[in-house]
Length: 304
Image 1: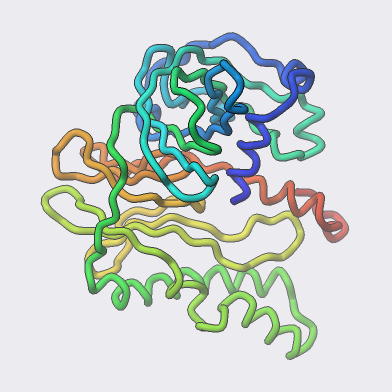
Image 2: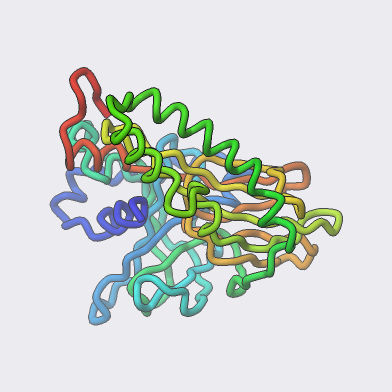
């Protein structure tokens, strides 16, 4: 995924570039509830290196780190870089602020967001890892309510159609052939904008309710630097959305670390949690406009 590639690039920068990037001392922001849902990603150093892994987290405002020095974290390990293979618990030993120069942001080179670097006391045992705040077990997959698939189709297609209408107005196909090409590219061969292929995870919610969570990425690619429509939804047992957030994430499963019967959802960007009143989502950063700027020439007057 784009955000994963960006964070991996951030973790592997040469020392000279890190110096240009202005690694600053910890500004010590006040702790907020957003800390509990934040996440970071780590690309391990070579096995021969005695140094511990460094985790990177985008956080433009600098107000929502996943923890501070001494805080416990859980590292979900991906030995082959893609498949979850194990869990390791660690602590943050150093936290520093990452502040890219304005020239990097102008170049739009995938590391344009300010954020945090964390030194961890975990050994380097995996090619890639996702780091979340707190101590958690390995996430598990729960079967979603059986009526979610049929019941959620209508609200999802209504949402997708709204995105399609905006996409159509932006692209303005000149011929029926162009229109048909856009329509099938967006709606896919299943003609459901990806509803059928979305993987759904069951979630135990408050008051004994059962929900499902899924993330999606629509294909309204206008190649002008405008990000595709993405989202992450929690839906009830009938498929009706109860909570929505902008951003596409990889979902690994759910955990219930505090044993209260309410699940936390483990994702590539952090945790989705019930805070007692509402579902709280982690911030998701996308470098899609940067990729469009590098890979193609935007129309006149359009700047990503």
